[in-house]
Image (spheres, rainbow, N blue to C red):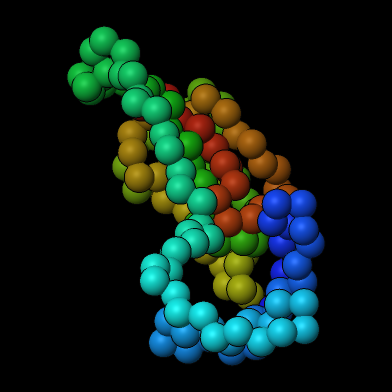
Length: 142
């Protein structure tokens, strides 16, 4: 079953465990068989135990701070090709104004504005291929 080599008081012993059931083991020590009763079985933990130190939170970290984000990114809802752009940098747009048209899955899609604001950047050109969640436009929504 399993073989071990022990050194006890300077003497070497070859030990083979032949059988182990219900706290009794059949051992062969240097060619001689012995029946051995086990009094206590040691459990070996094979999974390492992670020990983490205490996390120190900076003063005031529990307070939620509102950000004054003024930019809004218009992202592509699906991958596709840009067919037409209706806005340019500096244009003021209202909610539900058409921003651009793109082709996706052999369908023409009109992308409408979700917010009111001023166009601060147009990141695509007509004919560009975009992936899902690519930033197409950015708006200043103050």
